[in-house]
Amino acid sequence: MKLHPINTGYFKLDGGAMFGVVPKSIWQRTNPADANNMCNWAMRSLLIEDGDRLILIDTGIGNKQSDKFFGYYYLFGDDSLDGNLAKLGFHRDDITDVFLTHLHFDHCGGAIQWNKDRTGYEPAFKNAKFWSNAKHWDWAINPNDREKASFLKENILPIQESGQLNFIELGNDEFLTSTPLGFDAIVVNGHTDAQMCPVINYKGKKIVFVADLLPSVGHIPLPYVMGYDTRPLQTLEDRKKFYAKALEEEYYLFLEHDSVNELCTLKQTEKGARLGETFAFTDIF
Image (cartoon, rainbow, N blue to C red; front, side, top):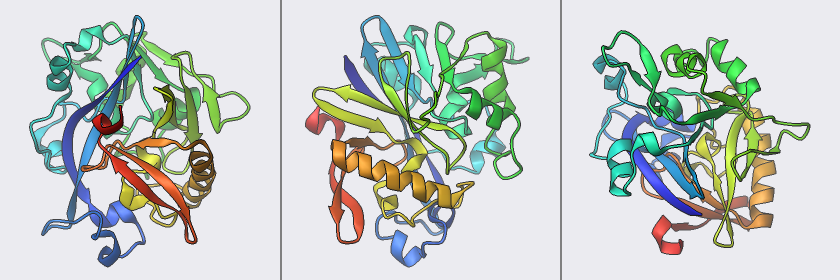
């Protein structure tokens, strides 16, 4: 098995929205904002080479939305999914599986593209199976008013219409579930319902792709919950459970949105779980 971080691009989001009730005077120490209160965020995917499988975890925002839409998110930088796949010698047609942690646009937008004559949409990975779970899929296609702007039908429905959609069975113990892809997933519900965070055994270490359970190292203290989360108290409970497991198992946390840090660990302190160390992926793997 080989793992490769794939940065699909950078965007900006309002710092207050990203940190909820935490004052700017505190969160700006780790996540400085520009004059418009916007902070930089990555959209970092993970590519897994495993035998005859090439698995991509999350796809970034994609490029099919309108200029007006992208204007809200201030995309910047030269990174792209296709460009960084090519640097590794791969093409999107080589991808056999696309694992979607959840179906918000910045995680699954790159899964779907315009068709050739721009009359409709088609999967951007024509040879891949797409993986979600039935609970989250239903949550996404029948969205609540709070999340409706994040669940875009053009990102989601064409996956099912193509016949490439597959569901992972969550089982009775929803916190940790097995998948057919050679890794387990931790299932959390505070940010959105049934978000899946892959747990990958790699070179003697356990790496967890934490998605929006933990957007950045600046979010590690328990109360630092995004304003976007639908059930912040549930986020707190799921993080407590996750932190206990992460400390016990010595997880390395793969950060999808942290614009500076790719990986981090946790340590136990008198105030609870706090940042241990940060790493570039190549520092330890």
